[in-house]
Length: 183
Ligand code: S3P
Image 1 (cartoon, rainbow, N blue to C red):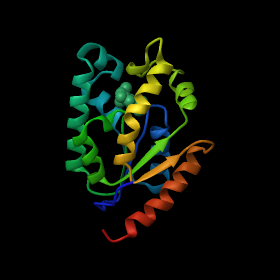
Image 2: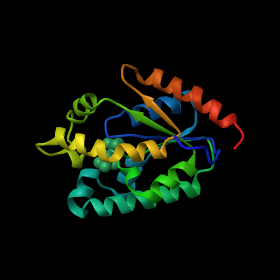
Image 3: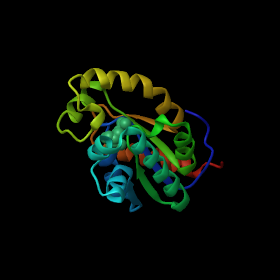
C-alpha cells in the first residue's frame, strides 16, 4: 500500500460487491459515533430510484458519472470523523481513486470469491451480476479491479472467517495508529 498523504479522521471503505462494506460501515459508526455515508444509498436517495433502475433506464455511464459527482461533493463537504462506505466500482476511475485517498484512511475489505458469489446471489440488487454467468463475471471483475483496490487502499483486510465486529475492531486499531502518525 502506498504512503500516507493526508490525515483527516475519516474511514473510507472500499471493496468488491458483497465484501461487507455496508455492514462494517454500520459497525464502525456504532463504535465510533462518526457519521455514516453509504454512497449507494445516497445515490438512490438523490436520484429517487434504485440502482438497478438507474442502470436499466440511464445506463452504467450515467451511474458512474453520478457516482463521481457524489464523491466530489462528499470530498468538498466532509471535514473529519466520518465513515464513508462506497460502491464496489468506485475504484474504476483514476480521479475517484485519488479523491478517495484524500478523503481519509482507505480500507479495502477483501473477501473470498465464493463468499462474494454466495452473498451477491441472495438478491438481484446488483445490475452487473444479474446475469446467467454471474460467477464468471465476478472472476473477471475481481481480476480487473484488484490492482485498483490495492493502489487505493492504505489497509487491506482479509475478512475470511471474521465477523463484522472483529473486522471493525481491527480497522479501528490500525486507524488509530495511522491517525496519530505525522504526515
Ligand atoms: C457496483 C457495486 C454496487 C453498486 C452498483 C455497481 C460495482 O455497490 O454501486 O451496483 O460496479 O461493483 P456494492 O459494492 O455496495 O454492491
